[in-house]
Image (cartoon, rainbow, N blue to C red):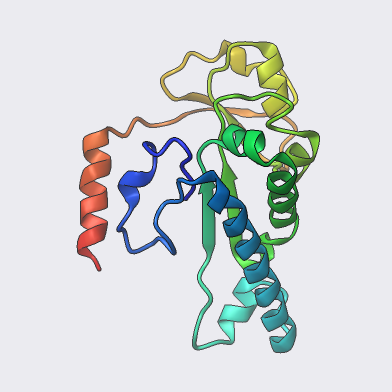
Length: 191
């Protein structure tokens, strides 16, 4: 998990699901993305040796299973401001190639502009969610169409699936800080 603001995701530190504590230093994020690329390459090598096409095929024939890895980046705008070329290059490589290896990337931003969500990033992240945005321009940056500017807030969202011609309107749920804290405490107790 990557949290440049240091307040959104750091509460998850200590849960058994994390490979590393939440990364808050922007400088460390590029190193983490490069590590993810090396891990992806290592997995592809293992798949080739085992005659497997993807993580499910590989794990079916192995006693020691490879885990799925999900990287969550809370504020892409901060990374694109600090190291745009490296961030974009590493994210795009992972988005293009890593899914079969069980490595998945979730990115979020509160600033949906073309300098943050570039054309290449959009092309490599075909599944998208937009909550309410200020303008039709912001909606088009995220979804390639207007509509998100008419959402009502409070979890009202549009989900664009990669194989769907149009986004679907959904309702996200509200999870309170107390509920999150209780869940985190439960997970920490599972260690």
